[in-house]
Image 1 (tube, rainbow, N blue to C red):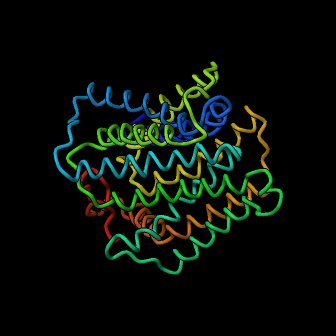
Image 2: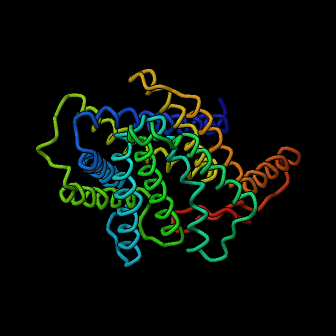
Length: 333
């Protein structure tokens, strides 16, 4: 196997790893929720994950100390929105829905992101395809929610509202941190965000009237769920995600958001007997189509570039992206 094939094989392997561990995290959450208060459960997950990622940073000898105001602001925003609020809403909302439904509703986050970008980032525009993509994304969520007396009585609608707040928190956090500069590597930054998020979750859990440490039932299943989520879904999953993003870019990497729900739905069905309804499958297809519409111009541009390289493999091309502050920005996008 030549070097290029090995490189491609590793990219595919990383994509599969991220999709598997992130998809399997949803049934693991459902298992842990049977014994643990949701917000405390999320906090414990990131206690362990932060320690593991900081250990990785130390082993690799990466810079770990925040040295600028922007570093601390980025850590604060990321800890609050990308970890804290995101997972507080996710774990609380998933008490009322299956893991498959939760993963699909969260996949609307990349579709919601451009709405915040319009208000926060300069020179951002939302074209016709973007508006249609947003509409299809929300339609897909509506199909899954099936608002009606049954959904209200069973708490499913309430759970989906919380999951939408989770997706919205992540989208807002992604936009607010998109153009901020940092002196830290993405791995070090993620470790700090996990630690800050864990603190936020512990404080929220302590203030929540329905939560207490005494309410936790430390079953073997609960401990195993925390271990799986911290080690595989958080530490290994995020490290593999960042490695993949450096190799193929953020657009291709974002497709994992639409592979992990398939894993979540099938694993939830196989392990927990969770039903896979026609509404769930239809809603997922509609949300995925909405995502494709939102990224239509980018996909078209990248496919055109790929076709050009196939037709003219020896033609010299300027780099199609630049890296700024550890983040990848594509030209003409």
